Length: 576
Image (cartoon, rainbow, N blue to C red; front, top):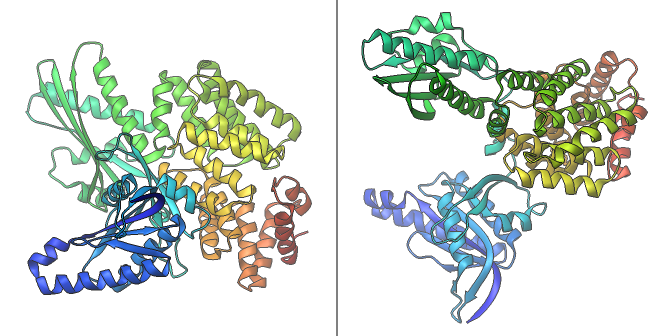
């Protein structure tokens, strides 16, 4: 028996037992066909099958890259065949013990099997080691699924869903689908909470909780909230969330049920996606009531935080709401975020004032200072600063103390990485931005900002992965995310994806020049010189003083040749 490092692919058929019970002959034929498919594609990618017990497949490869190539090819063929069986596939790189008969054992096999169990039918689940080895070498997206505790493993396993990028035919990968759903604002109606008794006191308490939640949601900028007068018409009506959503024209419906006995109360809340008819979140809260209303306020805060995470700001909302306990300070911060997301010079200045107030009222947290730094950096990056050097210095002055604060959540590192980027300190920019993601892997802003730095450092495929992941983390995101995605896809010559992202960006920000620059290049790539000239003319109308030279001076590409290629194409369209 010898030990070696190998890439292990573990696969298991979904629904085989059910098919076997229904039609044994058909099940065996389907299994034989799938095994033949696995055998051919595994061999064509320099792997070998070592076991086919039951409806499972175990294969070994010398290369993680080839293992991922094989898995994606298998899933693509199985999907195209639309047969009776779909497979879950897991891949891990680790040490295995190989016997003389070719069979393999060890932790590498065990982890691959655990990853396979995490995947959905038709998916490929890979470990962090596989993603690190294959990223940039495989035409695939690696969508972070976080850490997962698995059976018989001493530590949680970080895993990724590997998916082929969207084809030109229009099929979308999982992360692209979620990103495509966020162009419009989420809309929600809070229905009158129900009670389990006709007691007027209980009904008044239920209404109080509902109105508190409604009032708190109003302060979350960017959320379209149905007015109380409209939702009150549903009091004592037996309607489904789907019907209420359709009648009011909203996407989400929040329902509540209050059970009260003396000073004890239990509140059930449920969030439903109306058009999909799917419950997205459900929770109950127990409390003891007193005259101070503190328990009621605490429940309101928990519900609103959960909705903010689910519908608006992603997991970073938990940090914001936990850190900024004072309602007035939190309101300034959220208004600042709303202005910052608009991406205009005037809105950026307004956001900075609100973030400066946040920093003044909450001096011991990094949130206000970090966002002050971001606004100064954006002034430089967009060419809005009267003195770029001064604005860059002000950005550093705000970011540096935020880096050292106890609650630093990675965003200060992200802006510091961009300061290094504008100083053309590319290696340092990458290092600091990666630290930002390590501090808070689920932070949308840190991932998107890291993506932007990766793009300028000549790694557009990784940049696109990062920003798509950021969009998954934050359902409502600034136009900046789409700008990074559009530019990254453009540099990979994925023109359809670049065009879609740029047009999405224009829907969010109709006066955006960067979107039109991407569309100009895309039109030229398609041989549409008239279309490219039209986009160039729109840029001149939006910014009569637009200059390629001034724009290029603000573009911190690590490789000057990349910038020169872009300039050649833009000049061809008539920009000068």
